[in-house]
Length: 443
Image (cartoon, rainbow, N blue to C red; front, side):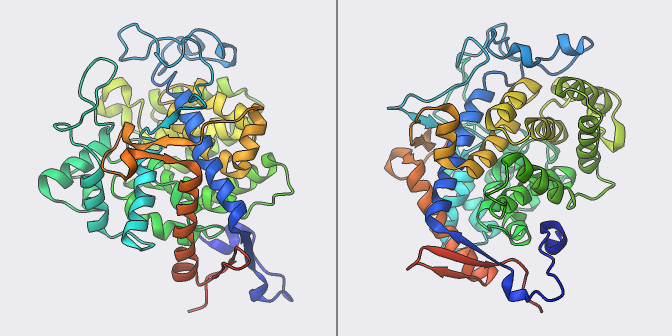
């Protein structure tokens, strides 16, 4: 249970009335921040794909992992690329869509896009098990009927591990969430998926992580249980708290505050909490991010400390795509990136393992905090506004072509409903503002 008052520092002074604890947000400003979320996530996602699964650890450590010195150097082949580097870029560098082209959807963006669409289509704030299942079956291809192929010419529906198993359970057995993440039915319930498919629910409940967790509860448990669900909730909380960050403070200070608030949600006996604390302690001790990454690899993938026992399962690549490994890599890039968009994404891209996952997560969060304009200032250039959901999914309007501005406006409609129906706040369309009470009403 997320304790909102303690975690958001929203504890009133003795003479401060509770009604004063109201967050007022401009809907138009928030729309630009949502555009920044989609753009920032897309830049980081596609840049991370260059190094995805290139480096997954080994005896040489720095020799088996990238370091900061590898940025701009030749990309190395991934573990499944048969000696061929990424076709996205010959070097480890930024990958941008052409200004007259479109950002393609990937598994770090497409399920979130689908969930926003389902919320609007169903005119609800909380998706039911049936709505989630029907959406997955309507918009996500099966292995048998996907029109897509990967770089090796093999059929590809852009689902993996827990997402794939959940989809199979829906399609073949008619099961509904949360049964689709039941460990007895889904042995991949602690793999990557919910971390990268549900962060957007935090943005749908600005400043109210307790409500955000309610909205995300079933979508998270469509694919995740245990520590993997905790990791997904950590990200949801951070995205919700980002809306209430002090815009006058440096981004580094804002990130430090909200990450520590989100940490309060993690039970101290969970390996997710212990992984966070290990990275935080390593940073405080003055270790470089590379040394912390190497130590994390030894501690968790090799020695299986703190109850992290994925390696015992003898999975492909020693569970290099597991939720815990992704979470650790993401916390390394978050803490050492210190609120800098480019610095954070670069560390995520170079850290190893499933590198596009943490890159996309923090690219989206920092993109939201900076807004679209802030990202373009960071790179001193403009970017394409177009998005193609039909790169990975099917059945959406306009042959899948969309743009970040329209996606952001639809996001505002979702939030309008959440503010009134779930939070009990106000939507002032005349002045284009929300009033969001920061404490839940008394029972």
